[in-house]
Length: 90
Image 1 (cartoon, one colour):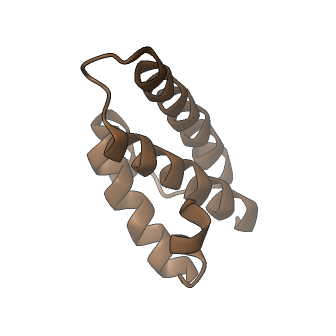
Image 2 (image 1 turned 60 degrees about the vertical axis):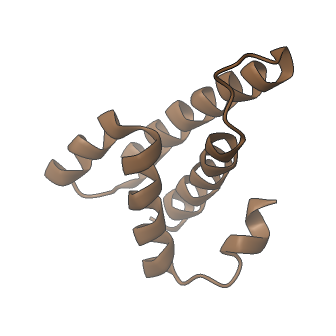
């Protein structure tokens, strides 16, 4: 699903999109990006946290919980994919 959107992006565009997604989806992580450059270890840590958030959002959807947000689920899936691709290139 997210791969089609990300297929034509350059590394710089992926990096910018990743930073925007992080800021919107997990605001607590964005603060640490201001003080430290992105590296493989940090991206892998983010990928784990994003995957946990994605799984939790998916469980809310399956359960029919009123706080489920399909757009957040899609954004988290994209952020996990981008973090993985950026980490593999560092």
